[in-house]
Image (cartoon, rainbow, N blue to C red):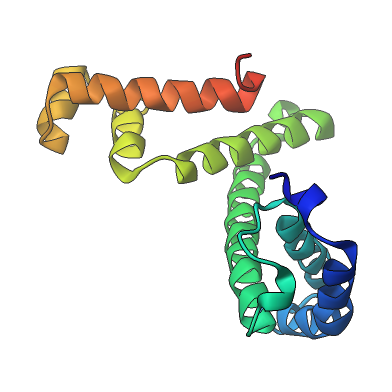
Length: 175
């Protein structure tokens, strides 16, 4: 059942009204920035709206623990994106001014880096490692198999899985 259709508006409103202020305060302590805290609090509630709820929100015995669990994952993603952005901007600053990309090109590159990071985080550890060994180190399938201590067909499976995830992220699921 689609979550947005299945969550009674009153339950969501009650959860939001009772805990939004507390969640913003909790996030402000973690992030040190009220604006980012407000954004992540909203993202937390949007995540709940977009999820498949197995039980009604009114059944939650510890709603703050539930909200904290979701928000903690968003904080981790926030810091990962921030670190990626800092590293990218530091590399850009090291370039001579004549070689620096336009602000539009910088934004596009940053968005691509964030997408790549998101894709890598969604892969299993072995799939991610196989893909990185193939793409960054230029290793052949047999070399990757030896490194990961798996068969060559398994490496092909890992790489096909990585390619499939990238395709879905870029073009959407085939119909």
